[in-house]
Length: 228
Image (cartoon, rainbow, N blue to C red; front, side, top):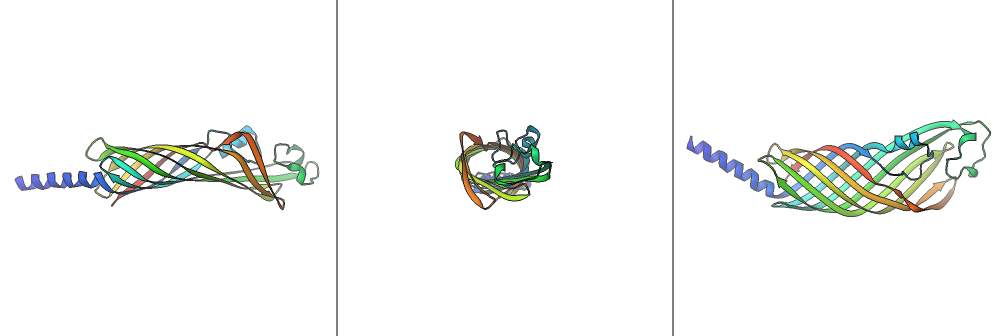
């Protein structure tokens, strides 16, 4: 009996020591929300903008953990898409419609497919709140890349832009073994664009936004943790 208790205590201590000093990887997927004014859409109506402001999010995080401190790298992505049909005499919200000659009341298709990519080094802390539970905080400054593969008047158009951003994240983690766990994360990214580059109708041009266009993101995701 004494030997069994000692072995259990040794196993628990070994688990805690491994959790304090290791390489850690997270893989998350979930829901993303863009609370600001989305850039470069083919239609600016409130209902359409709302459709594009929510979509799928995912991220991969790699850390080295020493005691309670963590340092590593974050890759985060977001994607949303939408489309609509409208009459050609009601396309005043479409960017540069004068470049295309249309017949009145012609039915047209427009669509947007937004993809953002954010990569940043991270610093943070992992705070145990029990034998198997912990809360992790991370933050960093990195680059964000925006792409909208869209169609306007049924012709392909590509909108791109990039900028610096910063992020803050918090995770609740349950470690159900020495190597594996599950985590629930809230991640916020703050970023914006001063301009975008557009390829459309065999032309390339830049559009500037003096007030800036938001790429702010708030994501909620569930994922897996692996410790080495």
